[in-house]
Image 1 (cartoon, helix red, strand yellow):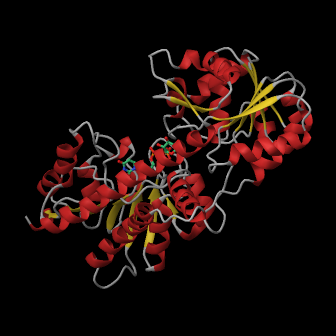
Image 2 (image 1 turned 180 degrees about the vertical axis):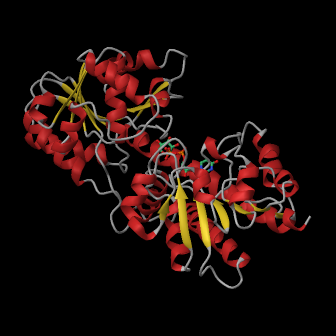
Image 3 (image 1 turned 90 degrees about the horizontal axis):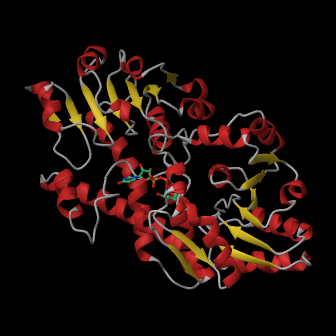
Amino acid sequence: MNIAVVGTGYVGLVTGTCLAETGNNVTCVDIDLEKVEKLNQGIIPIYEPGLDTLFYRNVAQKRLRFTSSLEEGLKGASIIFLALPTPPGEDGSADLSYVLEAAEDIGKLLKGYTIIIDKSTVPVGTADKVQQRISQFATADFDVVSNPEFLREGVAVDDFMKPDRIVIGTSSETVKKILSELYAPYVRQGNPVIFMDVRSAELTKYAANSFLATKISFMNEIAHMCERLGANVDMVRLGIGADDRIGKRFLFPGIGYGGSCFPKDVKALARSAVECDYEFRILEAVMEVNAFQREYFVSKLLRFYHNGLQGKRIAIWGLAFKPETDDIREAPAIYVIRELLAQGASLAVYDPEAMGNIKALFGDKISYAADQYEAVRQADALAILTEWPVFRAPDFGVLKNSLKESVIFDGRNLYDPEKMAGLGFYYNSVGRALTDGRKN
Ligand code: UDX
């Protein structure tokens, strides 16, 4: 099929590339000339495992193209994906101006029957607005469909190629037939394509992300209870996760969720509740707990250093909001760095992918280490903020020798507290016993 993808951000680029991989002709359109030029030179603007292989293969096969001209991009396309940003406005509601402006431009260019698909996470009712906007300008027939993405950064290619489910909001039988064909190669394992009305599809995306965020905040609260009651959150997690109704995943406590989706979507759903005269009480609490997690992490350091952080050097491992990405949007690390700097600490940071992005924010206010061991050299303590695999089994001997004191604050529960005590560390993690091996 001939497909246009409007917007080459994270979702658009992964969507376009993965659609080309099954033989479709895909043209990706972006108004950012520089970005398009780079993509045409083979420079991929994001780090996403596995994307490069598919990208280069499909560009070489001429199934994947990039242009800054919407007219050129739409030529011959029977399906148009909208993958445009919907940033939160001041009040948390999603800003639809990019989507609606694109709708207008598309309307003016439509030639024959076209399916227009909303991939962006948009509030309920957006497809109706897109439909209205296009019809003000279009003469050709078209359908607007909601088809939310459920891509996780770091495994987005896999999520697209082998989705758990595909949700499609439409009432048109023609659309159902065409999109069933389009997605057939991706649901070979028998995973369902779930058709529903447009509004339910739009709400499904918010409900899914908000539910996952709720699971995380709930576990973060259980972790606080564990710390106070002398229980171990790892055990509680295993104990409840074994119940199918609860499920094993997304039960890891830490320093709170970040990224481009959860914070934005939880806020937008809470906001949309207010707009329809409802108060989504659980979501208000989910956001509150999430903000508290990072504050609490910093307060642990402040409690440890009673005389303040002035003159203390803290090493930080992990800056991205999660492993396998260079993305620092809403990353807890940003808050932690700001707070520790404000308290007078000096910081040496390391992340396998996100150093450039953090440098763009903090410049020379902090030091950037070439590797994880350089970061800890002569540091008073180590703070772990992202669970990159490379941090999971470090050389503890080198760590002990490099740190001035054997002190670790772990916001991601990477190590076994008992083992850490045995190795002579003060080890402060989330929802588990605090151990101080230095005293052994
Ligand atoms: C999420 C959704 O998973 C995806 O379906 C949606 O389309 C986009 O948003 P993503 O933001 O890439 O994907 O990351 P995800 O792996 O879901 O993690 C989100 C945040 O939750 C991270 O900050 C992560 O550290 C945190 N998290 C996740 C926890 O704190 N505990 C957990 O148990 C799981």
